[in-house]
Length: 341
Ligand code: MRU
Image 1 (cartoon, rainbow, N blue to C red):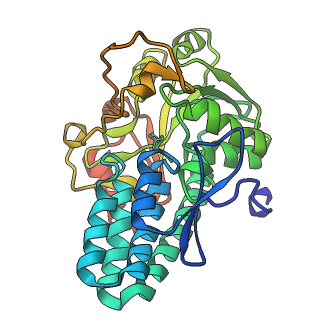
Image 2 (image 1 turned 90 degrees about the vertical axis):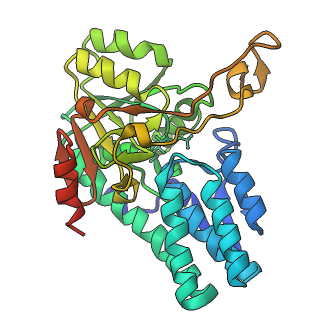
């Protein structure tokens, strides 16, 4: 199948000669360049500045970060301190804490080599999970379907393949001929910069729209499906994802269009009871007062810049994970899937 050919998008996160190598997503789409982090401080900087972003990619970065900490200063106290710094770098995507914890547990049991082996396994499992959930989700994409997506939930947001874009990609590989409406995704334009770049590399037809276009596209009958990723899925099925997802979910419900959330099981957090308990990251004002580095708001303008919002489970048609598809998600349905490793 096409999916097993050389991937047109290199791994987002990898271990190279004692360093963590990341695609520098700040430089895309202009340049495909890499940043190599030799210290945990550099890696934390890469996370907070969005050189690496997207929930599953953050999970693998956190795991490799613990491996890096263990390689650089292998005393248990130092590694635990570094793990805590990595965990705190971004609060909403549960995958980050999950990846850190997986590698830290391995370190506690077997030292630096075990931490690195766990990080490698974590990264490989992410790509496998995304391929599987992509295949499962592709069945929900109508033939010739027009799919709207928000932010970037593609290979760049994972170690590889992607979640929401993975669903589209699998549908494309299966000959279902999807076409994608790409939300530009203010404030930092992950849709315009990253999703459009990925879809171009994959040869999937797509058109870029401003975020405010979604409603009129839906009203015109030009959207068959909305597919997004997730940063955290609470035990009751509420979904935190990029700011603007909730607005899309309300619009989709109004127009009778299914909203599908695609995420690996590492994004499901059964310890968080519902969306109200999810911590939403507030980011810097200059993301909003500027566009591509150019100031657009008057000096002194006050800003509110939450990076994510919460979509209630009741607005979600289906959650697609590698463990299976849950339609009309509820706590009981998620719990049932939790038992299926
Ligand atoms: O702030 P970002 O770019 O890290 O936000 C990313 C998203 O909201 C994605 O939709 C989410 O992490 C899912 S990625 C597969």
